[in-house]
Length: 187
Ligand code: 5GP
Image 1 (cartoon, rainbow, N blue to C red):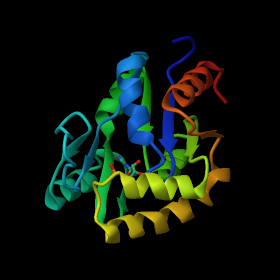
Image 2 (cartoon, rainbow, N blue to C red):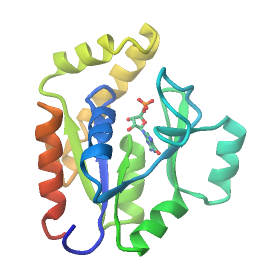
Image 3 (cartoon, rainbow, N blue to C red):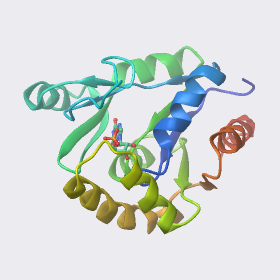
């Protein structure tokens, strides 16, 4: 990757396809280091500890948060999510760019604490498409889906806080757009 290492934050409503994009980048874009978050959410089928997330309990999470070991953290739909601080700082210091996938509150915290970060908002082609994706994922109960849709409306309203928006038409296209963006000079 050309230029200095960058911190890239990928955000956008639940169900928009951030995880699919991340899985794609994991195999197709070795330039970036993808941060692995800690969460108190239970693993979905196929999710592996240390790959998609570090699955922790609330007590362990709260210990990390109060020790300052999380770069940011937030509660989302009843669970806690946070970015382990030290791996991110180590990678940036060693010259590697880092990608974080965060919900809105976390993105706002990074905007404040690391103003050079590039904040990217991933949005669905339409609201109906988002509802379809969240509902058809089949991994959440209806009350969880409803909660996530309510938060999604709030998250979509925050698009203007981001440096750039990308529409998730296809995973390949949006991955290519993201790579092109991060090769551009920093702000
Ligand atoms: P999910 O439960 O669908 O994997 O994630 C729920 C939301 O939490 C998503 O919007 C995801 O981007 C966000 N998220 C994942 N990891 C982190 C993190 O470390 N910090 C914050 N603030 N949000 C996260």
